[in-house]
Length: 524
Image (cartoon, rainbow, N blue to C red; front, side, top):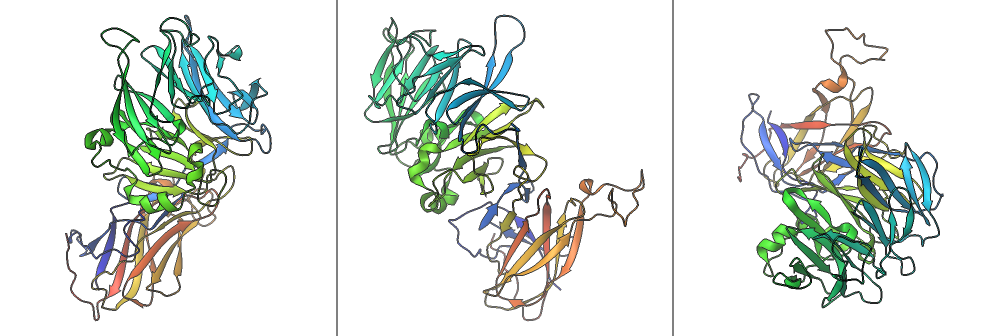
């Protein structure tokens, strides 16, 4: 009987269709299994990828603050503020902007440091001179400073800017409602001097939507309506190396400051209405062919997201895990109700959707574990620490689901007959996950796969023997189950929706009846 083993070669894609061409990768198994490539996935929800191309349920998220700042407070921003000081060790404070207040977090407690601000505005944070400078998109709240002791309005008569960036020992700012096209800069080495010698401004041909210090230049993004990118070069207002704006590209810009993130290899990634872009790719191809990182999910990006809320996108690069995250809003929703995950350890990159998470903001925080991990802000006055081993979202279950395209396992004209399925996985305890299959247009069939290993602590049926048995999480096992029915093409799905239950498949093999089957054809 022919055995067909799957090799997952791609991530979530909306550009490749529901059915994949039959492509064998050779017969390199001692059991005679034919290796079949799965070039993309039609669904990948609440999962992360493993480096062999397979996947597991995404990590969970736990509340940082035991008490909400307010049941309906939107946590619009979080920032990891380290004050270097002149003596002693650096001190850390995590700043949280929730509802109408700014808080500092310590051991799970949020303590208010300032109140009376406009709620639901997008903040931005930047440090200079050991002081955290804070601005929001409010047209009434002026920029503020926090030095871990005093919260006060930014001095030096600054414009009421929305976002800012430290570059060339100055603070640069934009987003002033009275002059959206104007780029401001402070005096040298002084974030609190916006009118004295050495301060000034430069005007752009459109609305400034983002700033980023990159490769000794300040990138100035325009958008969202007339997207462009300009390079601000030079080191002083006057002289032989005077500040100057040089156009880089038209037709590509940024939706907002918060969607811009630092990326691997010194790159910068950012959003506009057309997709997710790489600055190095944009620089390489110029005006002729700007490359979208999100080409695989272009249809989803274009038609399934609420573009009117792109100004509320937050991004974060979780370098320790090898993926980037953006929280955004799906079509028809009015708050962020989706996180898009981009895994850059693969070429090309792989996407997955995390609809279990509805986060107003994201940030990378140096945690008590000394790891820099993502934190997120909810719409219910809570900060959540992500990357948790328990598979729950603040005790709420979510479904980790992956669906393959329809696969022919030979000529799609020929009927094949299912016999058995075999899945290899890392056991996760006395639980199950589901393998489902759909034969052509028939009703989906399912099998519950037990994750119980040969020895498990706490089991009433197994005795764990020291130095002999191995705990479930340290083993790799295979389970076989019956499958039935004829098909021309077959869709497969893997899922696990139980609270605090992970699953981690690493292989799948089909046993098919050879009667009437054509010869396998290798396409590449």
